[in-house]
Figure 1 (cartoon, one colour):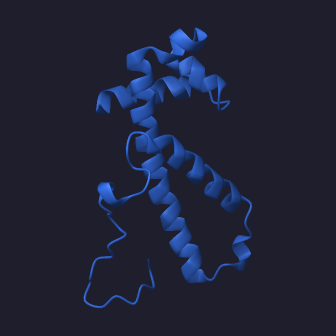
Figure 2 (cartoon, helix red, strand yellow):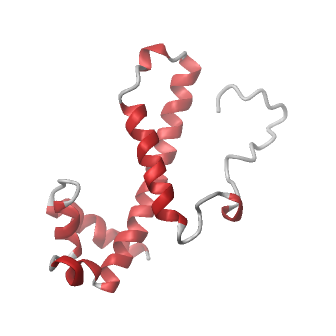
Length: 122
């Protein structure tokens, strides 16, 4: 991102890819894409950042923040849909925020807050 070699401010076509061209961007691809992202992020989390150059380190930090935004948006859409369908109540007898707090070991209050925000932005 910082050392692309582009001249004259030509936009990078990968910055904002067309959703139709992104593999796994359809309704059925969300689960597969999230599993793939989890694998990449898991291996990156244990990587040795000392081996990165300054430019690679800056690029990686920007990429992670961009990914965090996309993950937050995806989580909001998924949580809202779970709640609207009452999926977690039907499947395991738990309201959505309780289900989410149990699964990734997060606080119920934090999950409730994220669900409330997700419903608001929908």
